[in-house]
Image (cartoon, rainbow, N blue to C red):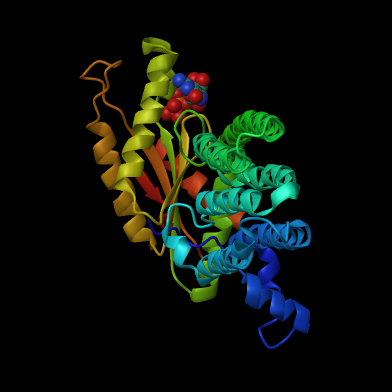
Length: 392
Ligand SMILES: Nc1nc2c(ncn2[C@@H]2O[C@H](COP(=O)(O)OP(=O)(O)OP(=O)(O)O)[C@@H](O)[C@H]2O)c(=O)[nH]1
């Protein structure tokens, strides 16, 4: 599965180009890449490799030179070091990015524990030292593996170390002292692995909780953002958000010399609807008008609830005549609207005032004021009509 590359970290945006920066930092970028997630994966792998090198050195220092399998120590060393380099190269090359687990943590875990079990056989009298090293290896798994994966890795580790212990029992010819040592070592490993599995399960629960909290926080932030910009009843922009959109549209219009118009809409006799049919019916009318207007406007237009039963529409790149036509189209649709909470013969209408932006000399409040006054003229002229401010 192809995973999308994470966005570059902000730190990198300001980072010097490839030819700049200290040589150490360039080397670090070359080895660990500049991608923050790859750096994390490669950093973990490199740390695991350092521990593995330590293991190799310890084995060479403590292994019994006269031991039965001593001649296998160098092939084992080649396998352990070669495997480490190969894992690092695969992760660094980016090939593993196409896989489900780009850090190939499960493979790393199984490889390290299998090498550990082999070292247990090769180490002779100092073999017990392999056990704490396995604890460290499994701790790496706590961060990279799921609980199920870690249980599988722990079971295989037990199997491998069980076989290695059996080797020592058979090799000693059933020496009771060796049997006791192997039993104790196996028991220690079992306890250690159980502890790591329990801790991993706890860590997974904590991670899940943190993920849930993050999702809840993001949802709450989104809700806040909506509350700050939207009118709760109609879902239109609220007055504050609309002021921002208006200021932006007017500055574009002034800069590029394009037309821009606004329509102030006020529902007619709305108080009567509330009084006769109830407040809930009034709310339904407001929602329905907003819905209808939203569906009638272009993507670039903006609709806001300006006051109780007042809406303000912004029409960028629109001259007065087109804005009047738009308002009249909307008027025709509103008058044909049928709502469940209102009688079918009840006809709805609005009075609208259109004002076209005069240019850079006209402040925003003046434009809104002209649209408002045009709307009042429409009211005075008998309602259910559109008046254009320039025609006054
Ligand atoms: N249902 C409902 N009514 C509201 C809301 N906001 C304001 N109103 C009502 O809208 C009515 C507006 O009444 P008026 O300002 O007298 O205007 P009108 O009755 O529409 O008369 P004209 O504008 O002159 O045609 C008032 O009764 C307000 O209570 C709201 O959110 N929901």
